Image (cartoon, rainbow, N blue to C red; front, side, top):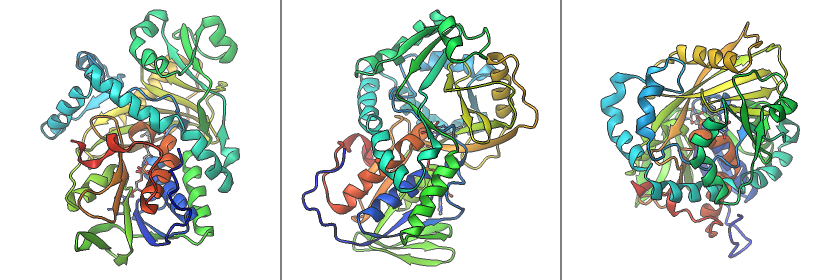
Length: 422
Ligand SMILES: Cc1cc2nc3c(=O)[nH]c(=O)nc-3n(C[C@H](O)[C@H](O)[C@H](O)COP(=O)(O)OP(=O)(O)OC[C@H]3O[C@@H](n4cnc5c(N)ncnc54)[C@H](O)[C@@H]3O)c2cc1C
């Protein structure tokens, strides 16, 4: 997917990136490889926001969008089940309503097909694009290739999920169904609540998502990149361009700017004339230091909609979607629900001493990220809205932004990801 090189020479410039999450740091490394001087600005340390606590999946086949035909019918059941995968702070509903309407509209079948194609274009090369960057940053030992197992209560539940699998199959993605005996051969500690499963070999997972971003930041700094700790509060503009970031610690002047500020990006894009309907889809995780069971693969619980990932620090269980607005405190009952769901899957699970975490996924209503140039400011590029696939898409996003900055034609059609699509 590397952009077509009209010329091998890239004119080196100074590029400032807002956001040191997995998207910002991967983009910083890609721009640095092109010979640019790069400054990353974040109010906190690299990889300590949403990118810190994800469940580590490089989910190359996560191409179906979150909205699908009939999604509204499932919502009440999810909302009123305290262990369900969806939670809503009703006080947020008036602000969420326009976003929800767009989300439902994105679930029409023709939209689902279009969005799936767009996500497939980004995700199918995602590991191949990560690979050289992981190697260059010395991170290969954190990446495991075991494949993913999706757990279903029974075959009927799998058949009820037929659209998810048809969307993949139609695009050439193969998978293997497992009856309980086959599942137990791969994961002996899964209890009787999971009688059927699907295995996809192509997934990878990482042993610690924070260490991935931290490793990219070290690699970037070793190559001469600058990381500045400051909150960006605005922009200096002139002649249709941005000339500097305004921060609480003074101005940062650069030739080009990338907004990779995760769930907060729309607040910055709005200042630059491009509002984006982005919501926080808050997720939670719990880390079990001593789970008392063996887990060999990353697994997806299709009932509780959370992932189960063997990691360096123990077993990480994470997922769920909470819509409560970006500035509300976490509701730790959601983390508890993940623990209860996991006990349903692994009856002998030991949960003593678990730690909990919440993070804000940046989500646009059509499940697609924003990747592309600003329509209003000639030297600004956007890279945000990666919802539940930001780890998977870090390097792809970074390469695409580097192509745009260099004036190369990106290897992927960026039309579906433009900021003014809504
Ligand atoms: C429970 C859970 C599980 C997940 N599992 C997976 C998974 O298995 N696989 C996967 O691919 N993805 C997963 N994700 C999604 C993934 O974690 C996100 O898509 C990704 O971390 C987003 O990265 P980011 O760099 O855009 O945002 P962030 O990591 O949030 O980084 C944004 C940065 O911008 C900074 N910032 C914002 N505004 C400003 C400002 N004004 N000034 C200065 N700095 C600013 C913030 O401080 C932050 O450091 C999961 C998410 C959750 C919550």
